[in-house]
Length: 420
Ligand SMILES: [Zn+2]
Ligand SMILES: [Zn+2]
View 1 (cartoon, rainbow, N blue to C red):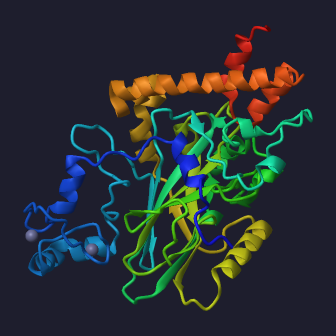
View 2 (cartoon, rainbow, N blue to C red):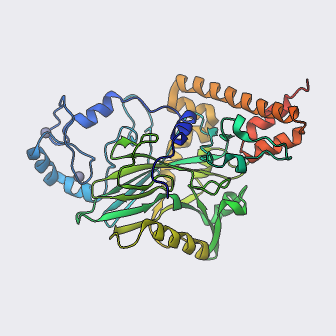
């Protein structure tokens, strides 16, 4: 079992993702402004230990606020904990939240908020592929050319059809009991009517199962699973607001960073990022295309966890049950709010990428997006050249890129390919 965060892999991920967002005046205020009396303090204020979504000057303010209504908000998980990397309301001057909540649920004193890792390049993302340990075995180019993808940024490929979910989980139990989270076993379930679309581009190795309910067929898709090396494509981003450091010692709450297994004490929260391939890159290429097909996010949890059985035993049971029945045996089903999805993406749905990027990220974001497209095209060109240099055909190069999800870039490069 993994006991430390694999060195390099978080950095690998970050290289392909937008940098940590700068703290804004608004977010600073949120941590320094008393939720009860409104006074702004120079120091960071203590927060409600149960939810961490509010903070106070002192215990008088805390008491007053509690009876003014926070008691209920705290119990109904109205707001996620204050965290500069999970900002669910638009910050000053912006139209949209940085981390919009598309699904939210709580039960038995445990809550879950699902957002996505939005970025200007909504359809074009690096595939965070933690295949570093066995990249030679897993990422061999087709056609027996005897080269590995090592020269292509250590197996990191662009993909135009990946969705990155950002999931915040928190224990707010009052009985001091732990909650066990099996993040790497998370699934999404499609709407019955969209199952065909969800299945496009999926193969047996993707671990997708289908099942029937009320004469409709549903698909259950693992969301933190890498079909290349059958490992979770997942990353524990932070615990209680502290970012997990590369190669650093793991906090006791993180039982297995690679599999996303967490044991959270009351008050503790964690943010997980998980990434999966949606569709074939043809019919489904945008975040919103993928999100609109989703009915629920299923997160396996044990609430409460009495430490009676080991996390890995629970995980093994879960995987076996899921394979057998096709549906999730334990945990939380978090329903996607399709109105929220529609509202957040309406500019893009109507006007395409450009409109989406402009309304969410402004001119600066649009420029960044263009630059990233250039990098992607260059990478595709490099792959084509490498195949030709080793005597491979353009068809092989194309097949390889399609396999890596580089649909747009590969086709563009092929179109403009000129043999030397
Ligand atoms: Zn106060
Ligand atoms: Zn609270």
